[in-house]
Image (cartoon, rainbow, N blue to C red; front, side):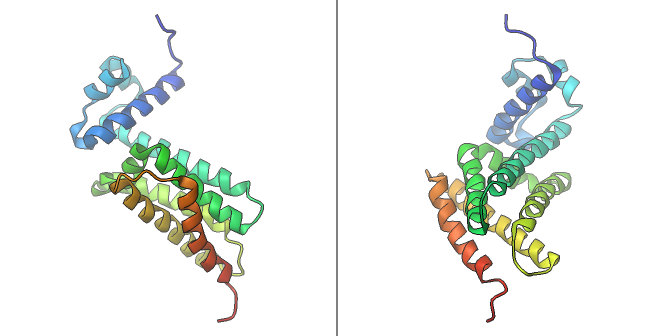
Length: 194
C-alpha cells in the first residue's frame, strides 16, 4: 500500500490530475467525480481540498499561471543582457506551451467565457506583463514599459495559439529565437531618433 500523501502533496496531485481531466473534457464536461476517480481518491477527499468544482478550477488557473510566471522570470532574470533576456523569456514561454499544452489550453482557452475565470486569466496576463516590464531596459516611462510588456505577452500567446491549434511539433528554442528576433528589433530601436 503506498504511503499517505501530506495535505500539500495531495493538493498538488489533485491539481495535476484536474488539469488533465479539465483539458480533456472542458469545465462543463467535468464533474468532481471525474477528478476524484482519475486521482484514485474518494469524492470526500477531493472536497477536503476544494469546496467546489469552481474553486478547484480557479486554484488550477492560479497554480498553472504561477508556474508560467516563475519560469519566465527565472529564465529572463538569469540572462546577461536585454537580447538574451528577450530570447530566454520567450523560450521559457514556448517550452511551457510545448511541454504542457493542456496548461496553455486551460489558461488561454475557453475559460474566458466565464467572468470569474476571465478575471483569473487576466491576473496571469497581468503578472506576466508586470514581470517583463522591468526587464525592458530603455529610456521610456513606466506606462510605456507596461504597454510594451503586454505586447510581448500577446505576441507569445498569439504564436502559441497557432502552434497549439495546428497541433504543431515545434522546437521551443527555434520559435523563441524567431519571435525574439522580431521583439528585440523593436526593443533595441527604443530611444533612437526616428
